[in-house]
Image (tube, rainbow, N blue to C red; front, side):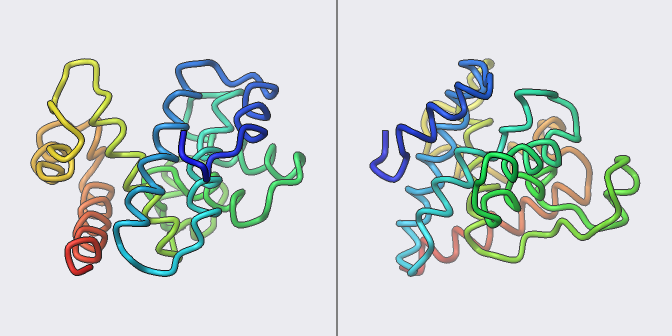
Length: 183
């Protein structure tokens, strides 16, 4: 595990009842997000990247449905997690919903868009890890997931979700790859 990922945070996820599959996913997302954040060469809040990524699916201890982001944020607040980590949990659904999209999905009306680069890196890493760990073996390597990201999202609706979400993820990909390649 990356040094940024704290054992006590992993233990807290287990204490909250996170299953081993979701925990393994969360650890992998945290590792990938920190790796990408470092590759940008920017002065980013790596603690937020690591913890936000690690806790992003905390709500899955109670539900795997759309509200898991909101549920996770509420749990995180009760556990005393920093507000910016709780914000990642609340806003990560479909990569940061607009208020209009939230209404369509039955979530409280508010803007869930991702304002911080750290948040966008976490969401990008989450989608990459889903592709990398796909049971059908869509890619043979982690670099291939980044190289073929746009093609994979277009070909597999479960990753692109809908046109608005697809465009959002592609925007994050272009932004973050631009930063990584520019470094």
